Image (tube, rainbow, N blue to C red; front, side, top):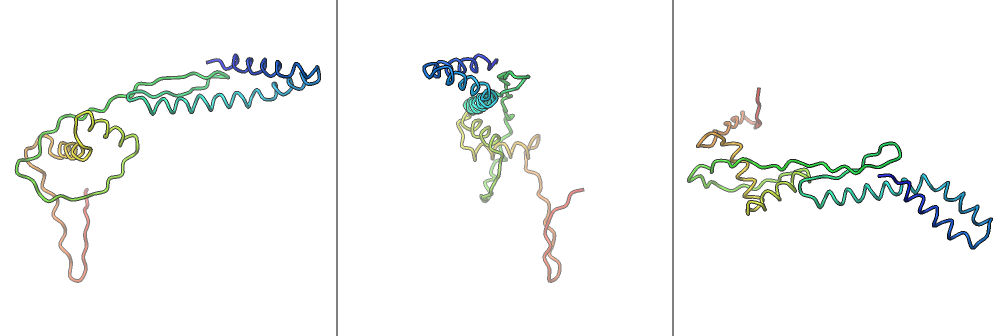
Length: 165
C-alpha cells in the first residue's frame, strides 16, 4: 500500500487552506507540509497497525499484519490452522471419584481457542478440558494410569515430591 497519495492529499489540503493568507502563509504551509511528512507517514502506519490488530481479534481463523517494504506498507493476511482435538475415549465407567478444584493459567490465545472449541461442541469449558485431559491420559487404554506412590514420610520430617529420570 503506497502511502504517498494520502500524503499528497494532505499537502494539497494544507496548501488550499493557506492560500487565502497570501504568499507568506502559503510558503509557510509548504515548509510545514515537508517537515511533517515523516511524522504523518508514521502516524498512518500506526493507524494501519492498530486497524490490523483489531481486525485480527474479530477473525476466527486468520491474522492480519502490516509489513513494511521500503516506504510502503503491505497488509498480509495469514490463515491460522484450526485446532481440532481428536475425540478421546470416554473415561472409565463408574469412575466418579471426588472432584478437585485446580487453577489453570493459559495464554490468552490458547484460552480463546479452548472456549471456541468448547462452544463449537456445545460443552462447557470445564467439560471440554476434562475430556481433553482424559483423552491425553487414557489414550489407547481403557483404564486410568496408576498414579505414582507418594513417598513415605521419614521420622520427624515429611518429604514429598516426584522425580522422573
